[in-house]
Length: 320
Image 1 (cartoon, helix red, strand yellow):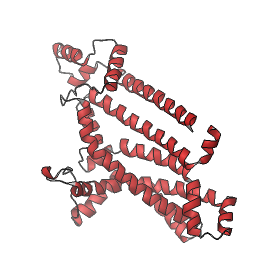
Image 2 (cartoon, helix red, strand yellow; image 1 turned 90 degrees about the vertical axis):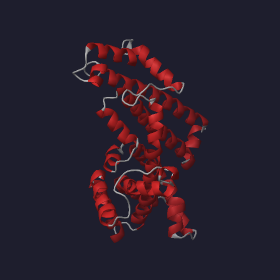
Image 3 (cartoon, one colour; image 1 turned 45 degrees about the horizontal axis):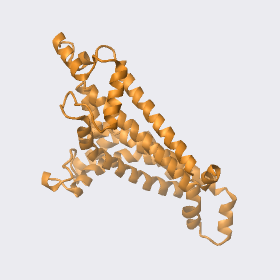
Image 4 (spheres, helix red, strand yellow; image 1 turned 180 degrees about the vertical axis):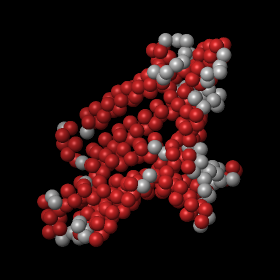
């Protein structure tokens, strides 16, 4: 197990280094001068030169890359050109919305997908199975931004149970609170979770059906275990490897792919931040946000690899 985790940790470090190099190179390859892109076509040569010096664009690319990475390792980030604030402060402020939103959406996704997937597999080729698969097909086909608008029309405009958008904050001093914050994130979480739950339910059903054909399932039933106990205690655990893989990809997608939904609900999250940074041509902020999102996906995949070892004992045997 130790060797397995060491290999995964080394792979994580290498992937993170490559991701940082790609993010930096892509912004370097943008057509034209980055300072001119930020200031626009009407900027004077003096203003462009001053911004180039402020951003360090007058130095060699390798030097700037090493300075950027070194600053990140020391916990120091550059100033955003549009907010004149360290990018890390802006990211932390916005992650206070995006991270709880992603976690709520993931919890809804897992709860719905595992329940529906196991339910459908236990009723293979019967009405329950067909109904779940039909509903999941509809869920896969529905764009989450369209579902977000539909949820606003029903629950905010017609029923008026929740607000149509915005975020009151987690502090009661700001007029919000924990409960008010959860209410503000509930509809966006549902909009994000619907598509992901539909995909994961289908994967869970297929994995459970494959495991149900194994000999140990028949042995467990012959020992007197109930069908429900066999499904949830034995079959589901052995079916979790493909399910965990998809869950890891989905959680990364929920963090990185909430840009449209956050803009529909006017949430001050990381997705709206990167959207505003692109609109303001704030390449410094875009670079740091994109690297953070890439690092989040890499870290999640590393955690999934660790969960593999806990779920599948065969990995421990192979490592030994």
